[in-house]
Amino acid sequence: MLERRADGFFVEEVQLDHIAESVGTPVWVYSENQIMSRLQRLQSAFAAFSYQICYAVKANSNLSILKLFKDAGAGFDIVSGGELERVLSVGADPSTVIFSGVGKRTDEIDFALKAGIGCFNVESEAELVRLASRAKLLGRVAPVSLRINPDIDARTHPYISTGLKESKFGVPLSQAIELYRRAASDPALKVTGIDCHIGSQIGETAPLLEALDEMLKLRASLESAGIPVHHLDLGGGFGIAYQNEPDFDVEAYGRAIAKKVRGLDLTLMFEPGRFFVGNSGLLLTRVEYLKPGATTTDRSFAVVDAAMTELIRPALYSAYHEIVPLASTHELPRVWDIVGPVCESGDFLAKDRSLALTPDMLLAILSAGAYGSVQSSNYNTRPRAAEVLVSGSEIRTIRRRETLRELLAIERESLQGSL
Ligand SMILES: *Cc1c(COP(=O)(O)O)cnc(C)c1O
Image 1 (cartoon, rainbow, N blue to C red):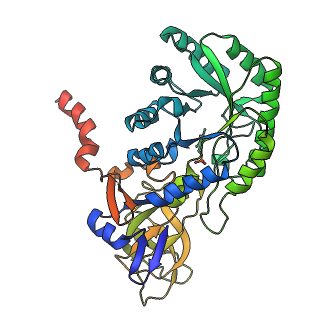
Image 2: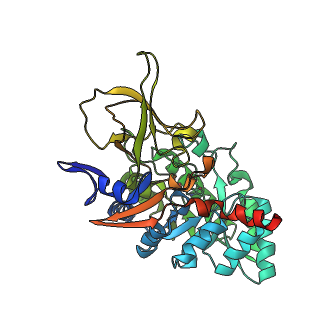
Image 3: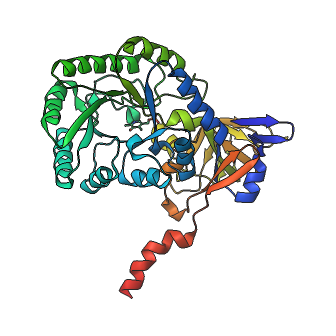
């Protein structure tokens, strides 16, 4: 999304220096056209069968970004009552909303039942029991799909692998039929589909297609047991390029799915997040200080104004993010660790990067649109950064920088009460 031109670095028609000057740093910058073209790419890849895309809200839940998806006809995959509040507030049709997650609280279930969401992706027997009792109490019928854990290795980072037996997610295939029987016989529940999500940042189509095979088998068994299934939800998890790796091949995936489901009366659902927004956003930061090592064997640190409080992915998953200096200099390149001001040795954004840097230089941290701003924290009492959406030559601040006053307000309340 970052384009180098003779007169600087651009996102669409906006020069990044201009954003840094007008909004300050650190700041998240997203490209509307990039997000929408990724959505269109998936829509064309899946055109040969009936499908519904439910954007995984947790990847980037900014209301203006949710609005883009809603206006483009996408549904939503949520994992909390908070995310339900978000999608309803941008006018999402509740019937396009599916609710995933292992720990749905009673108040969240009630909220979703009253809103009339499209499907609950149920992750345990205990949850099924709770959902049925709440639905009965509220006089509703809960649409359900069981999240199956197919015990398939998504071959990704262990923290974002969710389809193995040892993971907390979903119900094992061996218990599925029995649970579906219970759901089908409960008048407070309506079985609508089968769900599965085996992990994130998946590079190959093979594990996802293996999961699809398992789900098709389960669907056939359920049909024989007299339990019809209208949709298969294959989850999200499509990987993107952070370094040199190729994007997940959605076109090949779409072709393979089309072959497997030909002739079946089924809608396929997908819950991608990262695929749309990951490479559609960057984090803009400024170098505060340079601390070159005293000898060639000592580490050299570039201290920037962004930190793990903005982007925790390097610390949490050893994630790689490309760093691009937005100015040139006559300084020679040196191997730098790019670190933030937070008082933790784990507070780094990149390690061992050969870059020519000077103080005050702007840096773009690429591929930061997914699982970036949403994982921000206020650690070290750092107000959360602003977010900006670029569309053509237009810039819109879609979340202004948090102020210290706002950050302290809910603690001041109790201080006043006790004085
Ligand atoms: C996180 C998550 C997704 C989205 O994963 P991506 O890798 O961002 O596509 C989809 N479904 C569920 C259930 C999830 O937990």
